[in-house]
Amino acid sequence: MIRGDFYTSGMTRRPFIDAILQFPAVSNQSLDVKFLIDTGADRTILAPLDAIRLSRRFGLDLTTLAKGQPTTGVGGRTETRSLDATLIIDTFTTTINMRVLEVPPPPIPAIPSLLGRDVLSHFALFMEDRTNRVLLLEPHEADALNLL
Amino acid sequence: MMQEQIKELQRFKKDTAYFEKHRDELLGKYPEQWVAIFNEKVAGASVDLEQLLTDLEQHAVPIEKALIEHVSAKDELLILPS
Image (cartoon, rainbow over all chains, first blue to last red; front, side):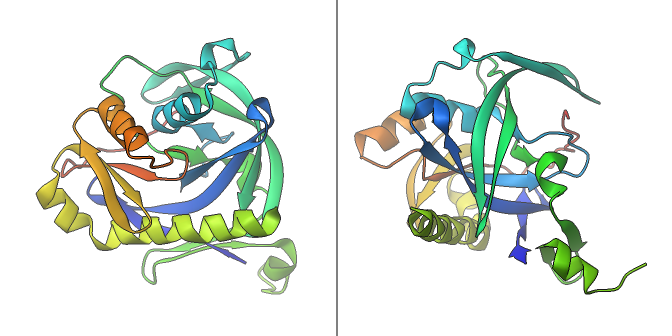
């Protein structure tokens, strides 16, 4: 079982989980990322803040990456780049092809990176505001609950 | 290698917990600014993200490991692209 937490973002408590990303494109260098758990996101998305950290620290020119599918939400449509990464959460590791939101001109929006269903689908997600619990259950743990 | 990553993740989690615990204090001190936390300490703050990153680099704070948050009292509704 992997534990996340409710953290305050803006003035609202939201479910987050800390993870490490490793990028083959920059010799497997790693980036620590605080992800917002987003069951509505089809893919895991790197927000502009984390994209800037990655680009600046490891000299990765994001504009040289292959274009990804644009993201579409209530706020509109945003262009993305595609980037392979290994995601590590505690002892869980998986390889993903993530989307990097194009970095807009300043001011940089203070939006978090999103942990989408490409990763969440490996788990059963248990979230309860009342007890501040954010749990990612592995399949055998979810099965043991005998929920129908 | 995996042990190193697990250890680093535990360190990062302490930084996120530190930020959450001291958020109100940080909001009073650095309103509407980007704040960097590294090893459970404030490593820098600025209204300008690029300036903060430059400051961190000058002080040898690893920007790939530091937690960087925008401290704000504004309550924005997040409906994100997916």
